[in-house]
Image (tube, rainbow, N blue to C red; front, side, top):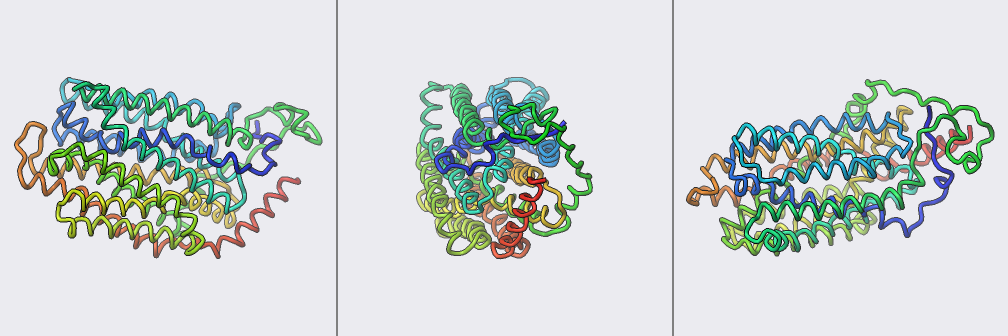
Length: 481
């Protein structure tokens, strides 16, 4: 068995296709916005479980998801599919995984033990399937284009579309939940998530058909099996088997250079901050501000800030380079949230504006994160000869899994410590905890992540230029053989 690309893979990736590369992230981020912003609230205020049980459920289910990254990284690198090495996950894993994830928003009224089994089960199964999808899309980036500038453009446009999904979700979710639920928020969240899931599934079908399909690898028996005439093979000898990658190489990937681990930890810190404030903002607006209708405006302005940041990313990269832009992203986000706590002093509009500013800096990171993992994969291949780009891409998802474990524990334990429940009388310690969860607490990991990335990541644009040039020569020579 072997894998072959289609003849069209030799053609440059047309610019008109670039916007479609992010089509799947539109619906994905809309779905994630519902999960990240409302899931804690859904469990405590609609399912009516205690904050302690909510913390246990979300922490355990997300802890299990931490093991997805290395597993899917190896699977993406080793598994071969007749329907496409990467496209298979976009076409099939996305709809099946999303159908199961919808069940997370079913209001299960049962004993705590049954609730635990149900919510952990559906989250773990759906999360495993969905974890492959965006990683597969990002992994295909290295084959879609060899131009580093186009790689940045693709990552940037993907981030812009993803942020647009967050903007749409911020404008629509609260209103749709109220309109569809008609007083039953549980029903509202379920139907809204269903609608967003359909958008995500359609989006990834477009990504596969327009962007990935022509550049993907397909499992074949021999060189002539896929459109024999079009492949223009000089002979019909069976394609050579790919060299098996020893397990030790995957260990070496994160122990032989500080760049991969610093990027992983830095992005985990950023993800923790993002999930902390988004997961707590519903409580803040409902109980602290006592104006839950302002939640729509808060989410809208915050995501507009991120959208503007995504647009500004290519400009910052040209002016400062990728690493400096990412340091600015982490550091600016951290300073904005911490200033929001001490300067805003709990004033809703001040908090909204400072978080929106922080999200602007966050947008700078989202536009180049895919390009960073491409660089890490290229540098490792240059040093060792092993191409394990899908493994590195999959580890990018681990940062969010790590963050999710921490956030579920922090939010649940913080609310439990001050005695919060949906039926309890609101006290000042509860209000203080909600303010801290939106501003000060998220700012701390961001500051830590800035330091880690600044001193640990060493793949600057200057260092990568000769590496890309040498790899291009090697790949050209291998293609001729």
